[in-house]
Length: 220
Image 1 (cartoon, helix red, strand yellow):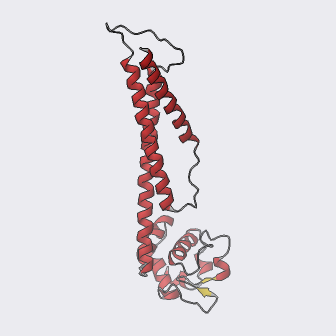
Image 2 (cartoon, helix red, strand yellow):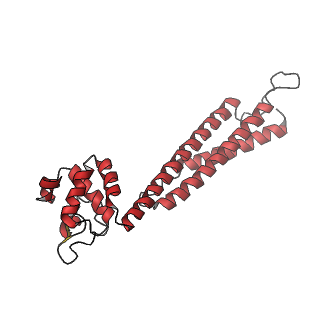
Image 3 (tube, rainbow, N blue to C red):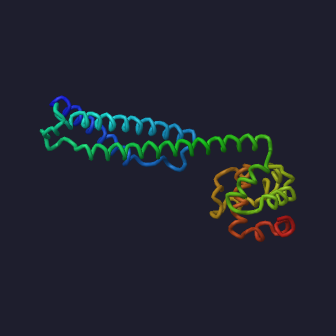
């Protein structure tokens, strides 16, 4: 391998090693980060992963170009610090794996964002059944039963009970809504989607009869 080719291979190897290590230790986005921000971060990580793969492939190509002498005989390694072809191939494999990982994450987050936007549109127009179906599917409960309960409790009005202690689509008592059992307790009690998912979760946990003492038995 010529001195120039050796220098190119070493430089490319150092770039790949440094950036690849940085990607591994970068912490995942916090679970509370909005999906738009998560998608933006995931796309940035994907671009960086693709750059690392390009650098790894360039380093490998440079190394392969210098593995044989003019007559086809293997060249003599001039430095013990120069990565071997096998090491560079392994870097390409790892970099390619990271590209696929981030491609998958970008697709997944983009899908979740589309679902979130669709759900927001349904909520704006008071279309509760599609949201109920998603929540029911998530927690393996009956969508039709939840819908009947909701209609009996509030008639599908998210602001039902505004002047009483029981509020929203499923008429939660304010104290029960704010209790630690409820993963959505920090959302407004009038948030239709949050009430729907909280209800599906409660039914899944077996709390339906005690939360809805009349409508659960008769409607669900």
